[in-house]
Image (cartoon, rainbow, N blue to C red):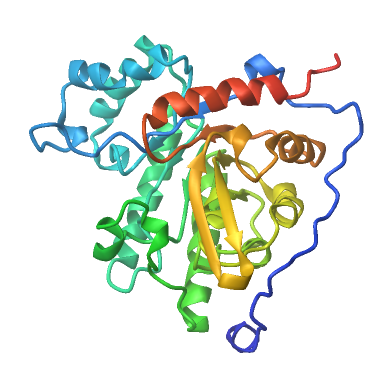
Length: 336
């Protein structure tokens, strides 16, 4: 395996725009108003106003922090480790957290392990252990899926700018043994999840083994574990301020492998002659990805996972709620 990976050709950019047309009548897994669409927690810091980690708060404090979510119109949310590290809580505390969610009418279609890379040069073993414990926590709470990614913590220079993706972050290791470690680790996590009746999903993210449509599919195929799918977070790729694959190519390549989906959109202003590319977050219906076409294509190819509506900047929770309403308006109806 290592020798094959060492000689593998670099991923090329694709400028073709494959057709995303589908049959007029589809067979979606849910009716539009029943499809699981979850709030992202990007705007929720991992510490309280007094510096305490969120996991140390009392249930009434959790409830107060989460009350804006249902008030914005959501009935579900993704729980990321960047906000609360459920795997580090005692079972009794996890049950208290579950009771708070139930009292607010919130379901959880997925947990997310955020910036805890299983190939970190120092913390790989610790992060892998945390990932396993998060799968156990998901099973205990009745959450069907855990989302993982290979992206690492933001570098100091990324934290100093308005938009972190405008500054180069941690790059993919060229060492084939590191890639093989990532493949083995996610296969191990996938097998663990499958043993508990769960799935895991791998989030596309720039500058890593999951940093392109082709690379992500090849990585998934090397894992070769049925419980592992992709989270085609295409926004992470189209926001790059450099040449990219067309969004149509990304959709056609990755969505047939998706079991979970972070959705967000960006505007791109390009001047190829000057070598200028500028990007900015937008609501789903206003960016360069046509989500009406992308969602229909995904459903036509068997997608039945949850959506998580993300948005950076401003009141992201409210923009996400707008995105949820947009998604429900474009989801195809069930025919029976």
